Length: 286
Image (cartoon, rainbow, N blue to C red; front, top):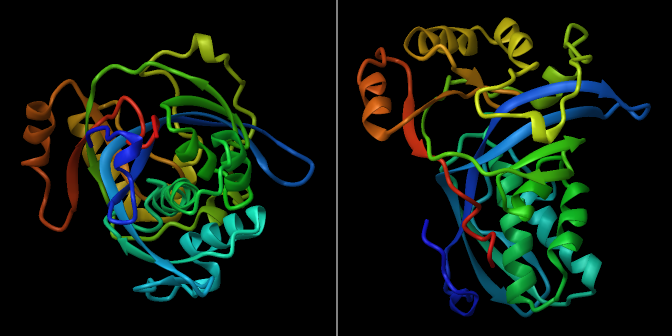
């Protein structure tokens, strides 16, 4: 994902919506309104959905190929575009073409990343002029992970996922396994047995390799396929963990060759791929 100058982004462009990994994910409390207080480090990787946009003069927002089972009014890309219209009074419309490469319910942030790219792209194409912080605030109303994709930096996130302290991360290649199950985030966060009192740490004290995922035990218990994939991966890479609320599990390696050696041993029936960590979101300098 090479950086392009801002002037080159236009209606003919293909806009990336990359995946993220949670290098750790601690639940450190819960607010009175039910939202969980988290600490995590987000890392962008070079696997992405791709979006294209076509201008419309009728003000309508249309997804060219709706995702099966997802009504347009609940699709995050459509909601993001309509939210930008409402926030700015924009009368322009758009047809959204989404090439979906990231699995739904995989913990890779695909839907949130799509929504963030819609906001960034249409803010530019419609010339609505919102700042990146203003777009982050809009994005938070769509979902807790949307702001980090607008923020665009590998970052230590706190609160409900909206307070950022950027971090420099070493080059790393990841092997990601995708169990064939859609893990609903609400079911994991709503579980009575979820640990919600991990002691908080300071961003400056975190180092790569520190931490765990508090959601992992719940997901593994409720979705045995997640546990099966994680157990296998840990046999080859003890540092393996789940990302987000699942279902994907991952392990980091120093280089592509090391990751490829493990991927080559993947049993039949398991699905996995290799992706490099990114220094930043491809649109971070946009």
